[in-house]
Image (cartoon, one colour):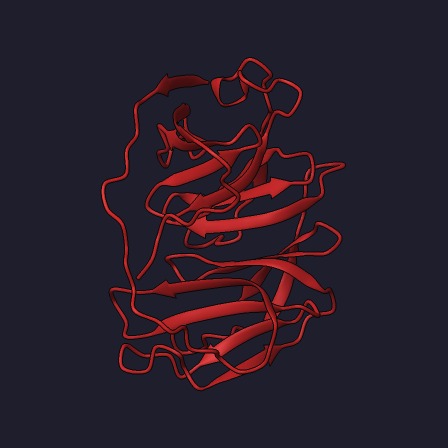
Length: 231
């Protein structure tokens, strides 16, 4: 991998007028929101504190809060969920397995069933993020993997490519005892937070090389979470 260091600075700050609107009484541990240029559909999937998958009905530009949660049955309690820019739904269960929601479309936004996706040997995932730049997952050993072989005819892909944690990799240079990553977000770009506290941007991602070539290392701080896309 090749890594470049850049000086990053804050370009803008968002100031909003409250208050937040509470959406029901369901406790949420993860949520994914996606809009689509070719459709008026705005999709929101979430996971309740009990591990249930939830689909938000009635979301439009005029009614962004929607009107109700629809429970989507799953035999495995979930901990992470993500909706891609192509309206494909990915999830991780409490045992670290990854699932793909089949037959999801604009006409059938909740899909039909969950399909378990094979994981690399001895790998337990905990977070997944899907976007224009691919499907990325984070495991309990703080390693990143990217899904390979995703096509129109095979939307779930064929296998995972693991990006090994390298002690002398610049995101880990200042903390070689705590290498790896604690957050990943995929959208029009891919960004991560390293365990040593750096915000990093993945470079060189192409259809031929979906894992990219290296990292731009940016701001270091007490970061825990990031999201690269919004609507």
